Amino acid sequence: MAGGGGKYRHLGRKSSHRQALLRNLVTSLFENESITTTWHKAKEAQRLADKLITLGKKNTEASRRRALEIFYKPHDILPKLFGPLRERYADRPGGYTRVLRVEPKQKYEFFSVAKGNKSAVPERKPQDQAPSAILELVDGPKDMRFAMTARTVARQRERGVEELNDLTALNVQKVTRFRKGGMEALESAISKLKISKAAKAEAEVESSRGKQD
Amino acid sequence: MALSMMSPLSRAVPQLPRFGFLATAISLPSISVTIPPLLSDLWDSVLRAVPKKKTSHMKKRHRQMAGKALKDVENLNKCPGCGQVKRAHLLCPHCVNGTWSLDPRSLEEGFAQISVALVVSRVQRRNINGVKESNANLGETEIKQSWKTAQTA
Image (cartoon, each protein chain N blue to C red):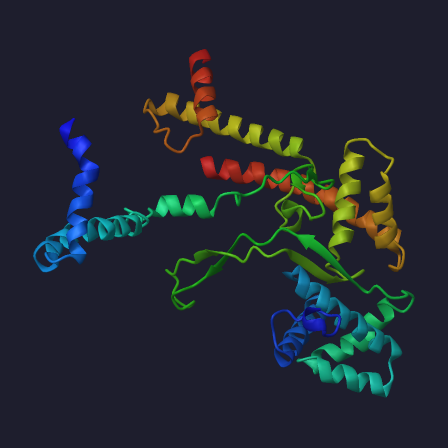
């Protein structure tokens, strides 16, 4: 981008720093299935993450070695990449990760005193208001679009609207298309939402009763 | 009248002797009269361009922030998951952070139930104890409601 260099974001870092950053991001991504970072970092990490999944799907000695070079915790992550993730994305022709824009974090907490001190009160500081995003592995346990689609459908059903609008229908297709047992998984998520909502309402009433007594 | 009539002559007269025999005697005072006005005009014109006062912080900030005010966020829509307002093309923060409910109406109903329960219990306690509770931690609407219920009961 800048200076007519390669067509990637330099992220205000020199090559080695950028490389380290991206390695850190993808290591965290494969470890946790989902990370929240700035949108630009997410988009850059997405490129690398997709390539790593492709390496996992190739599943050759060469691809193993290449993946070994990239992760900071290869011995934790390589078995996952060449095991469950490879199987999860076996039928999916690319697009293994997803970037969703979110509101930037308003505040973050930090301790000016040592954390062991129990009387320490966390101080709050305004967070960087850069555009933020969630980078997630598609069809994983922390698939945010899956969760949001489940919520949308659950809310519609609660209001007695059975017909999904175009966007929701598209989202349903997206989150169920390559997922194993996709529709059943979505249905079970929706039913769980209903249960958890009822439980939550009860808990609220209970806690309020507890407070006043 | 006489002076004004004389003035062109009187101006011409002292300049004439400069080059004449009385130069040393009369020209010195004439220089001291004619050049300082020229200089003072020059100095005045230079000095008058200097700001008289330091620009105050407020003035400076107003000037520099002119036209840079925060813009209104107009790209808003409703979250399909919880019904609360969110920015378009961004996920709803309530849903992402888990502080959501399926339907805001149900949430409001829940709050209403809770507040009614609170008020009722407070009124009961007041009646039993005969002690006026401090309303410091009560919301305004709750206080009004509690008054109404207390009056009806």
